[in-house]
Image (cartoon, rainbow over all chains, first blue to last red; front, side):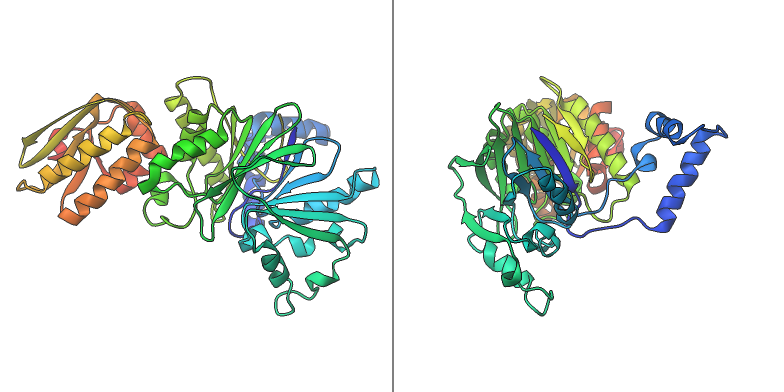
Length: 320
Length: 111
């Protein structure tokens, strides 16, 4: 199983401005300390070995879109955030190489940051493409059609050339779809959200759990969440806020924290956690700090096997 | 997780010991809320949680502190955290709980 992150930001896409890039370059040059490099490959070796990720790269700014490659069959994609546009472009390349022209989408929910990529998803315009949109929400079709009404977008949904169907999935059942088995879990979020647990033919498990608040008055329910995460090879988890923010000024905003995500993964004996749905106001330096603090919290609170804590970024690939 | 409390300096000083995790957070929460009730009857209306005996606290324990604070705010009681060990101090910083609770180096300075 291979998991590709095409969009990792929450709420709103963000982009790096010129002064941010300038700052990264300045820090890199200072770190180089006057050294010269024979070619770009030598410079890349220095970058990889000596610069932190916030200087050498960026966590990116596209909103949520994650691809799960679990076999040779249909594409499997969680959420249609702005990262979907780039995935669509890449899928053309792969379809030209013989990949089936079938897409299975799994929607956490239908809020704007999770569907805004669909009007720019190239394969939807191409006849002969088959798109199946799975959701826990019965109103998923209404959300996508409404997004492309004239007042918001120039191309109506009906003009799309692909064959598009919608399928409402029930939580508590195991659904066999494409190359994976899929289970759903209802989550606390405005208009409800759903987490997905995917199991491939080799038994590898990835959980996609975004836009999920773990309410302070209902902590007893977290045993069910830990059961849903049980023994997962990777849990992709909403970690938008600090724990303090999530229980104070940002309570009821529908999101979780790195601290709760780590505790749930520990309880579930999960192997890896990907911090996800990053706060749009966070800089790369902020996210690097949160990642380091999360690794440290995991070390401080570990009782059994270590949990590897990743910080998802646009372009990250995780092979399970 | 064990719990002791006493009247001191016009308020209540509570001394939990051990670990606060998934298995003990419910007891920790119940003790905390009872101590908030006791602190409401004291002249200083203050509950100092002496953390020196706590080895570790997970998010369940931290969130129990928030639930207790909500009750305390309604009763006009201040909750202060005192003498956390190095591990707890780090956890309070990583969770940003040191931004929403006053943290003192010692019980005496919190009273």
